[in-house]
Length: 399
Image 1 (cartoon, rainbow, N blue to C red):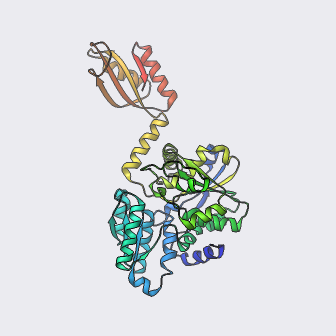
Image 2: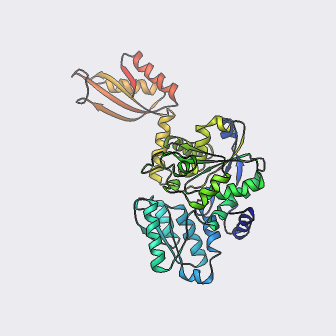
Image 3: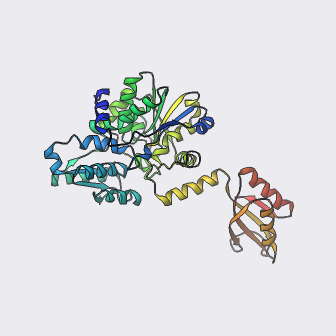
């Protein structure tokens, strides 16, 4: 089984090839969560993900004959970019098989590193099978995203850096897909600090490792905003390490992850993808589990589709009460809309959208239902806007 010495050797190989990213305390998140939060900014790597650590460690150990053959990998994006970038740097041919619905930003970045991208299948499992076929047909070296000791050792260097920068961390909360990152980090961290707590996080829509370790049979979904950890089958190597070294696994839902993405953007001014926000999502969802502890979180990736990010931000504003939809019932006569918008403006809210509804309503025929989407300061402000409208004789309610 993988040892600390393997991870330390990987760190030597990676020296100067990947960033030793910052690991610093977030005072604001610490105040909000009730524990001391330290963030490891792996989203600042050149490919915006920790994945290039394992990829680089694997590729630099290929034999001269293997280098001539080239490599093939399957990935939803971050492993793809890591393999493509370091293959380009080392002068190797790289073929990357990606699921057909991989976010466009990840596909284009992978192509930008000189890799041959093949879009095949609707899941990582289908992509993996096709990559294996290409490996057999064309003699390419298959580079697994997580079930490989060289990959796991490279990912484990994250823990070495975190404990060197912040030796008082007593808990690591790590996103889990196939398990490469948490396996490497747990191996290193437990060897350095046997008392450290290692907690893995999976999305409720893809609980494969959770099911394997906990013996549960939770159903698997079809999609998640944390596509980087949307893995349907745990790794054999990684599952064994997790059973031995990881203290607990927890689940988070899509809303938890969305909230964490928005908080990191607003508070830390840093952009993460769904998988990169999973650790913070777990701390927010299970505050009692981490209360009073010194918690290290890995912001493991920052590759997110801009349209998805825009949707997440807007939904986050709705949850925070800063974007609200209210319905006002009024007589359908000239001047009433102007009166309503004037009241809203005097209450300090901004009108984002206005929709009149005359046909699809149970109101009297001479009345109209006016739907307003408002920008507000929060839930108390929404309530105040509604009170002001009601005080002026309008029926108003939050939708």
